[in-house]
Image 1 (cartoon, rainbow, N blue to C red):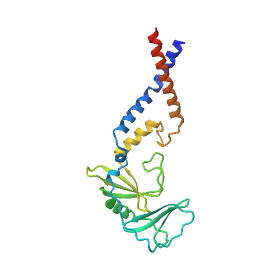
Image 2: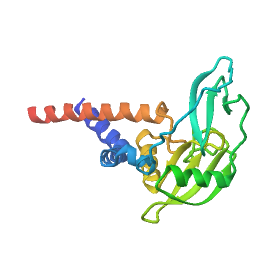
Image 3: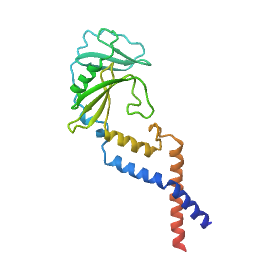
Image 4: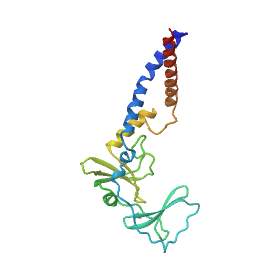
Length: 217
């Protein structure tokens, strides 16, 4: 029986040792990096503005998540009724911003210096803008240290929906290692994570058993 336990512990430890190392390294990285800085919150400026809604003329059926936004000095309304909708105060649908407008938004609402912008229409698995509504305007900017920062702007609302830096990319890589989802890096309900978590538990239990059995002998 003892031999079976030793062999089980040895081979389980061999298979899970690398993943345990990745869990440890990624956990240390998470502990020493503030999530607010990873998300680029330090680059955002306060978004206070005056909104005059006295002349608002708008009816939206089955609306949820209604927001009042400032888009380059224009007050607009954002709502969702199964899809995202954007209106001016007269109830008219608004058009997309131009790429040059997104440069202005980054300049006005962040401490970053915008350089160039482009439109993104297609989603990519594991992309740094995953989970955001398309299309997006990607603005390449620089911080005070001349580090390239990607800023993603919703071209309808003018909202900055994501700020991505090398720090975020490192965090994202570590997160993929941590949850064992190396492709999409979003699925914490994957089979690999469940199996290796159980194996790590079994390895720990067999290690404790071996410790006490060796003391008796």
